[in-house]
Image 1: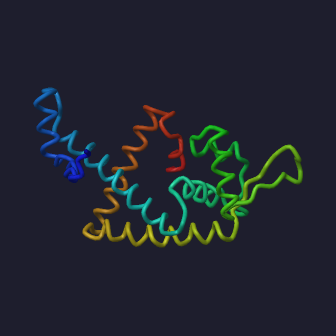
Image 2: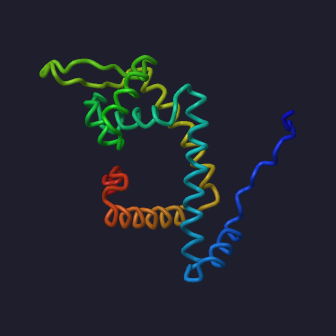
Image 3: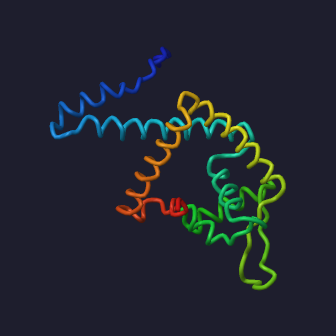
Length: 185
């Protein structure tokens, strides 16, 4: 006989509770640093969930969104080789091939031989893929404006500058930890 009673959902401790527990176990912890880093981590996680839910309503996954975004960022005509896509997304060639296969089947990208080099394959964004990307961008823009609505223009600018400095620090110290932020100028 199985227990059919629902288990209560485990709640994540508040930041204050988390920091207090960490300090109890690790006395050298700087609570101010931990508050910032933990808040950034939680914000990132929750934003990824929100973005994932948005693109799911369009019938695509976060992984597919990343490919669409990478092709758009490459500029017109929105074409890259699978190896370059894999490198930019931090994927293995096999994982990239699987993703491209799925997306080509969904009509989001095409995969054709390069006319100048028949050995080389080119992945290109389709009109359907671009339409999905644009709709995802509209949804994200609304979400992001709502997220930042309580910040003044000066606060947004300051926060942006601070976050870019943090990103640059991580990239300098951990150059292999993502590799996709080098375009921050």
